Length: 356
Ligand SMILES: [Mn+2]
Image (cartoon, rainbow, N blue to C red; front, side):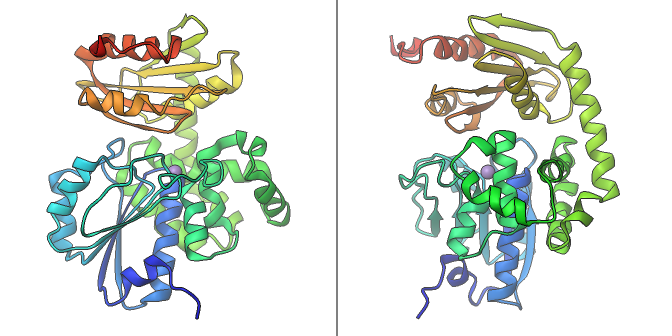
């Protein structure tokens, strides 16, 4: 007998499954994969997919109320490394509802009596073997390579993906697909364009568009609404990269932008690719009224992951991986937090200020 995957088991007998997912291409494709699996395993189940407020790795009271009010009897969380206390708040707000979490971010394995957690990276596997949540789901669900299972990898790994171990699988797949290398990256940008315009509703709708269209990828690449949105984002990004002030601290490039669009990670990725600096820090002053977004991306070996708990110890919302770090910082703390980050980049082994 073929062993049943944990998602199929969890969805049995459930009528209303809510899927909470990251707002980027990996999270949107992961939600689509979960919904396809639910439709296969339990065709009677209704599904609802929601991204958190874009930029927040948590749900607020209103978002939790919505899931409870909808009658959620199973919660699936994908591609979101939610902090333990924020996860407790969500589960407390959905009394008796079981949850399944599938992820690939480096994290401590969360413990909760109603939670089934699947994250090979948290369980000790190499990040390079599980470079995206869609890739974790591919293994979990026993799917082959298809547009949905590879999309997250192209999204999370960007154009550097061809230098990574996973390329030995993806390269031949792309070769045999109807898409070119540029089409594939354009599709990632298109799927990401909703979150970059901070349009949560469009993020949620993107899951449906992918589900409907993924078997005809060229149709997706040509979708008018996505292309218009992406052009708008691209114009804003180029303008910020050209005009935003920048400084160098040691070998680190610090770039300041000021935009309501969520383009900080793309800005960092583009700067790291086009400049010689091994580390790029982008600061977006236009993130929200009282808060600034800080994003770090590095090439090379420096491990940024220790910065995540370090930022969270300050009470900040922070997430990332070994090569990226994202933090939301109150304006009044910016100088202090930047000092801490730049200090770590200069000497990762130095004792922290509060350790002294
Ligand atoms: Mn991801």
